[in-house]
Image (cartoon, rainbow over all chains, first blue to last red):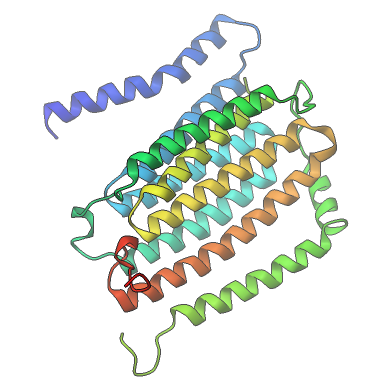
Length: 200
Length: 103
């Protein structure tokens, strides 16, 4: 690794570490309304956003898949901070454990040697970036301008309540989802299987 | 900061915008599927955040988030199977070379 890339790395780490560091300092100095939950939130949010940006911009797609795992892990941390530990556990199991592995296997099955050297983006990448920026601004303005009737402090959703809701009032959607998963598994096998005498 | 609904919703909107950019701009079919997963995660974050801050939605939001995860798993399975099936025929994962229906 050359000096130039080391300097770039140090610069990137400094820029990325500034907001969480600022919140940590504010917390230690004892500012009102800043707690360790805020530190965890800012840290996880930043990791999630940077990993998400890496997912959509990196050239080597297998690295994109690994960055996606980091993004999902940070999101699981945010679920813990917001007070939904059961969803955080399911996030780790389903997304990191199952979907990421599935995507990594699909990447290994479909990429050839020359793929990383080709263009990453389509020709409409610039309009897409503008559209995404506009979307982010519109969503941000909308959610901050609306009164959601939110309470001032977040409520931990107990696993017992979630289980009670899941198996009482949501039992029909639960069964429908199980049938849907079965159909998806059978459909996936059917679509991806080799045909006799067909191309390999 | 971690006690306001707005910060979670803005974070969710940012992640959704990143995912939509990836979906519109990437050439690789699997990258597009990964971007869809990012968008689904953003929506899930919004749902869970609403559940933590709006009293009547408390347990329901976790249930809805779990169901969204299951549906996302099914979507990933079928989507990747379709990509692999197309790759077997066309020998490329790039979506702008899937032009058989345009000619």
